[in-house]
Each structure stands twice: as structure tokens, then as C-alpha cells.
Amino acid sequence: MSTPTEAHLDLALQISEAIARSGNVAAAKLIADSEARAIAKQVEALAIVTLRWDKLEKEQDQLRAERADADADEIIALAHWNKELKRAMKAEAELATERARLDWLMAGGVCLVQHSGRIHVSRLHAPVSRADIDAAMKEGAK
Image (cartoon, rainbow, N blue to C red; front, side, top):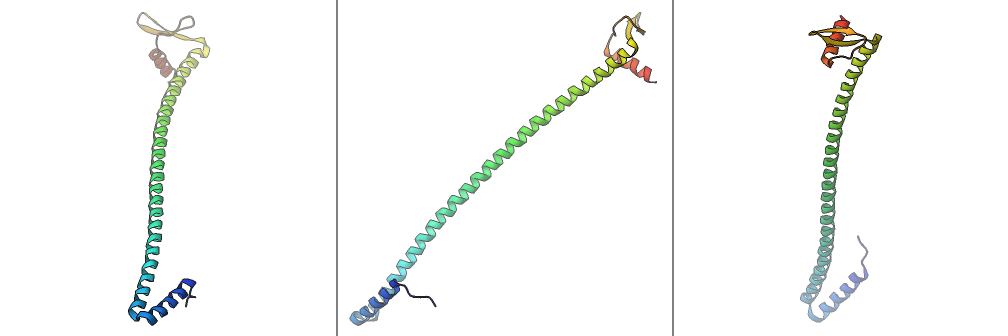
């Protein structure tokens, strides 16, 4: 059982005076008015809570949207990074191939030359083409 407040005690006094003056109808009206004020206060409190809730939901939606934007930016940045990584890896592979060609040529100080439509080894001339070097490298590996 709850403890009556001063407002309850005041209402009980008003009801007893209304009964003495005008009977039960006046007392019932006082009770109805009191309940209406209590309900109005609760409705007002509920409206405030609802507004706060709506505000929180909007903030949450905004945070989700910002997170989605950040995720999209990260995905785009990652895609660019992957593209650059692939480009760098391709360039490194090409450079490694060139190094292998140079290493092969420099081993023993030999070079390939094309003379009279044929490729042959010379210590004095530069190679004709990369394809010629690659072919000679394959022949040398056999």
C-alpha cells in the first residue's frame, strides 16, 4: 500500500467538504478532475519521452549513415590501394626479368648479336633484342 501525499490528503478533505455541501456528485467530480490532471501529467511525460526517443532514433540513423559512408570510403581506398599494388607488382616482375637478362649477359661478359640473319655470341657487341636474349637464355638452360 502506498503512502498518501499531501495532494491526496488535500483531495480527501475537498471530497469530504463537497459531500457535506453538495453530496456524492460533487465529490465524484473532484475525483474525476484529479484523475484527469494525473492522466494529463502522464500524457505530457509520455510525449516528452517519445520526443526524446525519436531524437535518439534519428541520431542512431545518422550514425549508421555516417558509418556506411566511412565504410564505402574505406572500400574505395582499398580498391585503389589494390590497383596500385598490382601495378607495382607487375613493374617489379618486369624489372626482375630485365635483371635476369642483364645477369645472363654479364656472366662471362658475353653479348648476343645478329649477323647475317643469325644470332651468335660476341664479347664486343650489344644484344639485338630482348627476345634474342630470352631465346639464348633458354638455349643455355638446356
